[in-house]
Amino acid sequence: MRRRFEKIDKNSDGLISKEEMMEAHQDRIDKLFLKFDKNGDNKLSKKELAAVRQEMKKKIKKVRNEGE
Image (cartoon, rainbow, N blue to C red; front, side, top):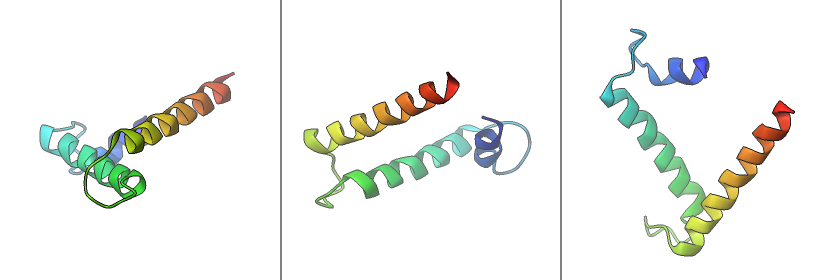
């Protein structure tokens, strides 16, 4: 969590501004579309979005299993 915070806090002031948060999420959204927008139309279909959900479920399950 600390590393993620520091990565988002671009100016290292110990605070996350709205702009920094929006930039961080824009990067995540861009990566999400690169990975899951299979036909490259800059839109996610229901099928593509289902793949996103499956990936998220796998990651959550992995994190939970590591905590046990």
